[in-house]
Image (cartoon, rainbow, N blue to C red; front, side, top):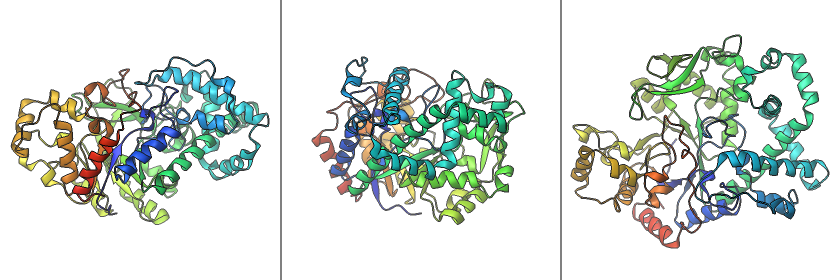
Length: 501
């Protein structure tokens, strides 16, 4: 796959401004698309859109296929008659700078329950046919997900492997009883998913009409407490009680001296091979209905993954195990054609990972914040002058500090290397845009920068600190008024000057 020379901005929808404490898929999302188009950007990159659980990470979702109900635009529901003015009379005190996920869990779910109750009592009858069609088209994942969430709610939020054995193990009799007794709750979950996908597809079409494509993000692994793990248990390393025997993570690296213990269940690739990797084909098929480009997080896990015995306190005592990513990607290609994948190939990259990426013609990633470390930094693969055309370059990602924050805390050796390479002596005020310019001037076909770097924000506005569960993770929002005409003009001029328009 070859991406034409272009550029884009990384911003998760939760970071949009708006009146109800979190970004939504309504007017402010459309304004952001308009701003991107005015700055002549081709892409809006988002993080995974799935429903988040404990820790609020978009990379630990209750489903690899479902959408996040927190993003549903409530103003649209009011305009459609699913919510009434009286539903908005007593609002919590929302923070315009940060997302309070605990507040959203309580208040927004109550609002969505009201929307469903209104529909179920005969409101918005014009949605009935579309809802039925959605249920039929998405049944392959939606039926299991809706049952899973209804059961989870009935069990007070406990993870599925803490449910009674017959429900945990999906015994047919227990499943039939659950579907009958929890029918209203199951239907409510499905309806809320219908609302999400209806709004997301409308937003994606709005962006497409303005020349803006969506880069979506799919984590290579699924969450332990997910409908995917519960409904496809044979495809993972679980014991007979639903406990994982091994879990995912990465060894010690740039981000952590003890590695990262993610805790995700690991795939039994030999089992997945038996049905021709059907689950993966459907996952990519679903992603193609949502995105124009698909960034696969931790792509190296398709070649080999870090297997950590369960339980463990850190990721240190693991081992590399080969995966069947080559066979899987070949099966996906045969079923779906050339899927537009960006391979997140950061971290410990070995020749087998490079071969897998290159044999399928996939662009990899480069992060400029990683370019200036080490002794002989001139051989660093991430230096702008060392980048390839079939590559996506970032100033930083959601896991990095903001570029301004990075410069503030960078080792003096890294600062020195940057000065030598750039023949300049930037200040904290000027560094972020200098790094953005380097990304855009590079030969990499696609340059993507976080909005925080365009706004020249510091460490307090970073999106995530890997290996931590701090209250600031995933909560950042920009303020209405930050996206000025002057900022768009500056980005537009850089885009045009570097041939990315």
